Image (cartoon, one colour):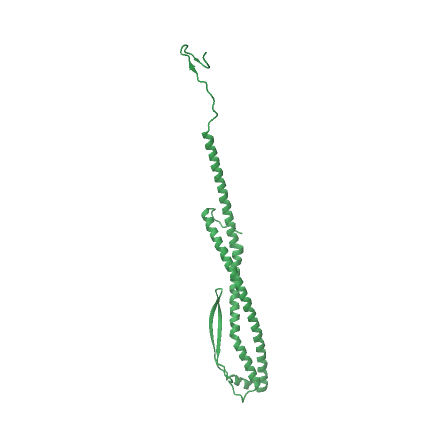
Length: 234
């Protein structure tokens, strides 16, 4: 912890206390954001992993079917049949917010023909490979959406974690240490002021109160004799 170099005054104490409350509120908000981001990231990562496994299985089946089509039809014939599939894929990308993080929402639109190539020149193995590849294409937008969203949430979570750690281990302890230091200094000053006031009052009391009173015998002059006498005249 590092105490801030500020004079120990009441104004600085109030200011730093307000900044400490603001830092604590910010820490609570960021901690809640971290929890939400962690939950969303875990869900998206799980969905993306599941979808990736499904797409991997579909791609494996698609390439196996394509290999069988090449064996039965020939590589050149399969290539000519693939040229018949030339429909473009239109992609719409929108965004939604997750704790202030923009994540994409991807929608793909493709015109699908029932049979883009001639039935007379192809075999069922090519139809099987085409169907598997089409399923992969249909799942690509969702997979891209989950992957990009997971990466963005992970990056935001990393930044949020750094801010939470900075508040928890640096800023808030520094503010607390500074507040404790200023309060201690102000209390010490108040004790010194009270001590000085008491000492001043004690001095004033000592000067106003004189020594204890004594009876003084006043001399008187004998009118007849002219000499001063003390005591009682008979």
